[in-house]
Image 1 (cartoon, rainbow, N blue to C red):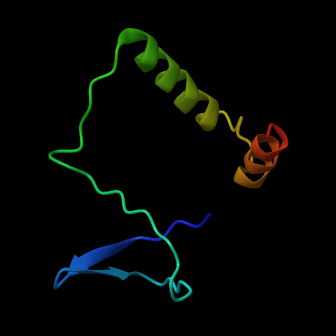
Image 2 (tube, one colour; image 1 turned 180 degrees about the vertical axis):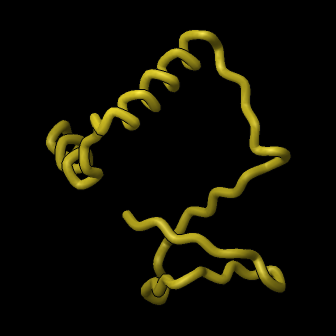
Length: 73
């Protein structure tokens, strides 16, 4: 899976610095409203701890996460 960003121009999505093969299936996600959300106390606690882990350098490369998820299938 790849991630690409872009803008809607003239009703079409134009990607920034990304080339996709002709006929590729894509999913488009876009922010709505002001982009805020509300979280319950448990979710907020989990998010804050996750941010703290990242700040401490306790991260795992994306490739490793994907391999581990594929191993669960």
